Image (cartoon, rainbow, N blue to C red):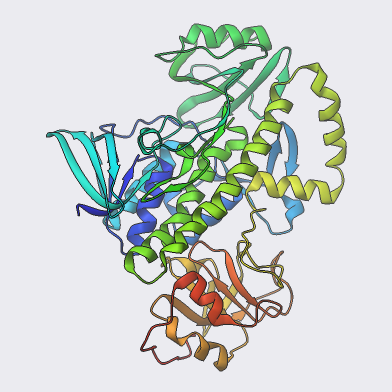
Length: 498
């Protein structure tokens, strides 16, 4: 075998997956067609959940001084994340190129083998391994791995080669995106419906403005190259009356509102993540963020199966959990597409939704959806935390201040004992080769979403709660075995970790 896992594509999803696999001690080769980072940025922000995910791995400081914001939107209708009660904030104006640089540096530091100028040509899955044909600087070669993951975007060659079904609806509208220099435009971070279309403006670093423009009724064109800037400037002037034709275009792209999702995220030894598995209108920047979260869900599971500590059936939960997340994402982005790109016939619906968001429950629902904080996996019932992400819980571990988020930095499961319960630690002793058992005391009031009186929680490496007490399933070993595999034959003696 050339690698345990071959990842095709060095975008955010592929690089995040490479980092997660290396964090778990799994060897990985990343194949990327481009010779270097493109510097182009379709996405320019991180949702509150992705901010949490990066914080779980200690990556936030690598982004430098980033602007955080407590507001978002749903189809152009403003939302206040403050209604969620947890101080959750999005990272605004973080270009995708910066995210890729952070993830690539992290993955390389952990030992990922990232091979640029290597173009994927095809694959064969024989049931025991996957053979990949690739064209690189030394010509065509064949590589083998136990699993291949396609993270190669909306036109995924891996998806096509492996025969995944990709049903959905084709694009009906073309949108232009351009990064321009030499103009001074007022930011329009929430989509602004003007005339017969929609425009947005974001200020990036270096005096660059990101403009997005869509004219209603402009059908997508079959293009072999980016549109000329004149088309973008003409559309902008028709909708806003502002002439930007004198600006210097840095990067231009055209995209549509096609909506598609594969019927399965895994076929044999081939899996898909990110845009390879789902495409949609990038409303609210949810595409890149969802792709990163796909990879964080998949990485620890794939590593556990490869290491032999978990049953191969654990990989089935990747499709079971993330396909539903993708399905709901497509529903909400299609709804946003109607709100953003629809004509005057949609205005009554916008007015009604705007009115409804004045009710706190409705505002909370939409804010949770737009922020990525509404995800709940089916891990059982009995405690409100089950299946949800663990909010940041400040802790005192001995004399050291820490948090539930920081405890996830090693990429291992965490059994958090908040009541100093020796019996709990004894029951988990046979899994301490795979999880960290931590005794700590909460500092301050419980954050929003954590019930008062919570005595212990079992966190998966991706930060989601697999077991909690009181109120959860009484059998902790059952949860441990489900997510972390059978108990070790010679368990490590339980000890109090403070």
